[in-house]
Image (cartoon, rainbow, N blue to C red; front, side, top):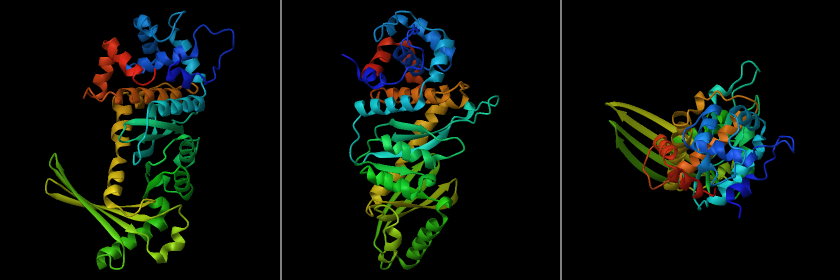
Amino acid sequence: MASPFEECFSSIKDPRVVGRIDYPLLEIIFLCISSILCGMQGWEDIEDFGHSKLEWLQKFFPFENGIPKHDTIARLISRLSPSGLQSCFVEWVQSISDLTDGEIVAIDGKRVRRSYDKNNNKAAIHMVSAWACKNGIVLGQKKTEDKSNEITAIPKLLEVLEIKGCIVTIDAMGCQKDIAKAIRDKDADYVLALKGNQSNLSEMVGDLFEKGFETEFKNLEINKYKAVDKGHGRIETRTCYALAIPEYLNDFKSEWQDLNSFVCIDSVREINGEITTEKRYYISSIQPNATKLNNAIRSHWSIENNLHWVLDVSLNEDDSRIRRGMASENMTVMRHIAINLLKQDKKNKLYIPRKQRKALFYDDYRENLLKNSGF
C-alpha cells in the first residue's frame, strides 16, 4: 500500500528521457528531504548522506542502483517543475493535517538572497508562503513572477489552499480588493494591514480613529481589548480597538468583500525608561471583536519568527548558493517539508538545529519524524 507521500508526489512529471532512468524520481526527492531534515545543505552533502544511510533509506524505497552522484541529483532537481512540486506539497499537507475553525493563516513573502545568478542575469527568487500559526506548518508556497511582487502570487496561492473557517492575515502589500474577495470566496476571514499602498484608505481609517479618540467614540460601535506584556526590560501595553463600519461609509464598505470592521492597534513600549508609541491600522471581515482580532494580528508575526527566521538561521537558506535552473525554488519547497516534519515533533522541546542533529545521529528518531507525517 502506497504511503501518503507516494500518493501525493507520484503525480509529478519526471523530466528525464523514459528508458534512461537509473534512479527513480521519488527516491531522489525522498533522499533530498531526508538529507535536509538532518541539516544537509549542498548537493555533495546529500550524496554523502545517502551513502552513509543507504541501508536505512532502503526501508522506504529500493534504491536498487544505490545513491546517484551529486551532479545527477542537481541536474534532476534543477529541471523539476516547481509548480508541480508545489502542488504535490499542498496535497501532502492536506492529507496529514486538519485545520480547525479559527486557525490563523499568515501569508508573507521572503527573498532567498543568494539565489541570484549574476552570470545568467537571474534575480533572487521571492517566495510567498502560507503558515498555519497554531499548527506550526507551511500550507503552501508560490514564487512571485519575475519583475512582479506578492500581489500577483497571493491569489494563486489562495487558489490551492483549503482554508475554510480560517482567518487569513496579510501585511500591507496584500491589502487589495481582489485578495479580500479571494479569501472570502474560500469561506475564510481576512485581516489586512494598512499602509502607504492604500494611502487614501489608511488615511481615512486613521482619521476616523483619531476623531473617535477625541470624542470617546461617541455614536460609534467600538469594542476594546487591552494587554500588557513584560519581559527582558521591556513593558508593552497593546490596546486593540475594533470599530464597526459607520453607516455613512456603506458605499465604501460595499467595495470590499464582506468588510465588517476597522481595527487600530495602539502600542506603547517602555524600554529602559524610554517610551515609544505606535498606531497600526487594519481592515477585516470579522465582526468587531477586539480580543479575536488582536490575537489574529499578534499571531501573524509567527510566520517571521517560526518560519522565515528558522529558514535563515537553522537551515541557512539565505546563504544557499544553489541556483541551477529551478533548483533554488524546488529546494525551498523541500526545506518547507523539512520544517513541517520537525515542527510536528511536539514532545521534544528542542531547537530546530538540535532536532536536525538528533535526526542525523538517530535513525529511529528520523524514521518516526517521517512516518508520523505520511512517509
